[in-house]
View 1: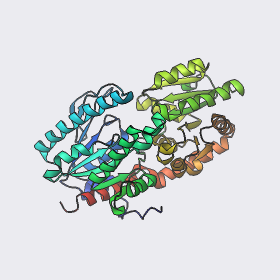
View 2: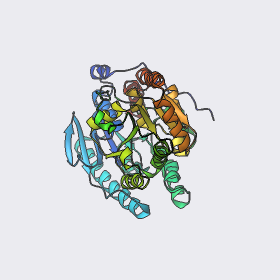
View 3: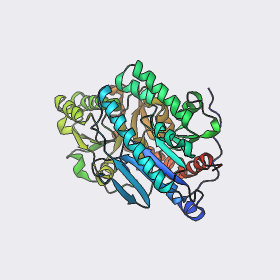
View 4: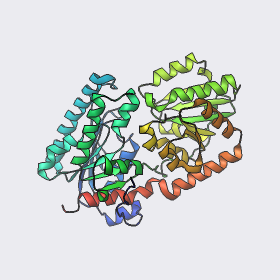
Length: 419
């Protein structure tokens, strides 16, 4: 299927343009996100700040999290309402508890916002594909639903549990109902846009691509901090969630091959991020004899994150090649490119669309080839410099958040066109 042309979004816009012209002046927007707190969820926070700069009154509902426990606060003119959630879900019962608690709080808080301020748009960010239920309760009062498609949940379920079955079919149903409830959808890339049009049956003119481009005013290189190298010559950096489908076991196997089979004791691997598999990954590194060569920071502040990536000689994305990862744009790739770092990743469609010649591509799910690609880059400083420059230039020219402002505003103009 050839994806229909994108809807018109108008000329590029800057934050200064928004603050001057206020194209969304007076619009009342509620953003609902379940899987991360705000402002830790960088995409959602950039969207909220952009909408506020355009004149909208913006409220965000999200869960609490470490460092984000305040239940009601105003940040940069945006009201943030946070609610508790059960611990990280595992298994069907865990997900039922998490989703049930989230829907309860999201509904209660959405009605509180509507009664106090009124609402024009509920902007729901998946996962899960259940937030449309909150929007439906307010639809009789003229509130419209805009769906922000972060993850393709049927493929995500299959990647996590390596099977289909009743729950997979439920994910497909929820996705279909989400698209049916949405007046407008925004996709993070063209693969997601194609899904919205084909599987979600949305009109092409109602689906806008708003990439998770880095904010170059925030994502900046800092001076290298050599203590992260642990006395070694090279540093290989990773940032992301420590989860089952992120392929970190493949990265550790690539590290084992480099250190133990090829004698590359000059490489330190630093993995930044938290998640449900962090303890398992730490234990795996110990069992494989890699503990001296692998630093696991857990969830880290931005200062440490940018210090690690700025010090890194090569950055990696070991996400497994599967239907989910093949079609998804990974934020880590964008941040690596913004910092001018060469990349090694497995061969995935959207990874290549984003990085192009800024990355080397290992054979799918092959840690031996990933190890070879990492070694080749570490041993070729000219290639590292060339690839890092290509990535940075691509972000500046096409992918940074500045380039996402116009399509985001266009999507909001579409969803509120006749209000």
